Figure 1: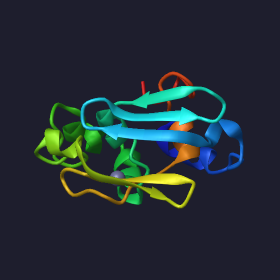
Figure 2: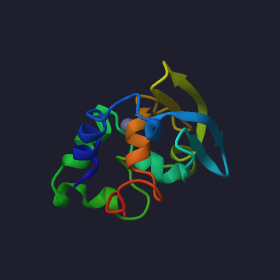
Figure 3: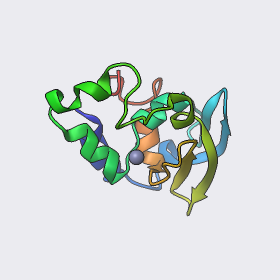
Length: 135
Ligand SMILES: [Zn+2]
């Protein structure tokens, strides 16, 4: 399953399930995003990983490009997905809750269209999500 299929899968999960309900969120420039879930598990996300998995329409299109077209972006510092300054693209300026179902992150390079649904975050969690994703 790729990232885009995962986004669709996430949005079909029951919003009220304990495993998709955060009781505490913490975002930090160095430690990244930490979420404590109602089912007792804790997820930690590296900011670079979250940016790579950005669920916004623009990044979805970027990920769907054929490998050949994607090549320049995949090597080193990308000019399309992570424009020029990788540090800026993977740090955040601001983050806020969207209703009770998502977190929105404004990245250092100004990219701010990504709304990270909690169900999506849980599914892409490196320790408690689907381990075949994003590796
Ligand atoms: Zn995006």
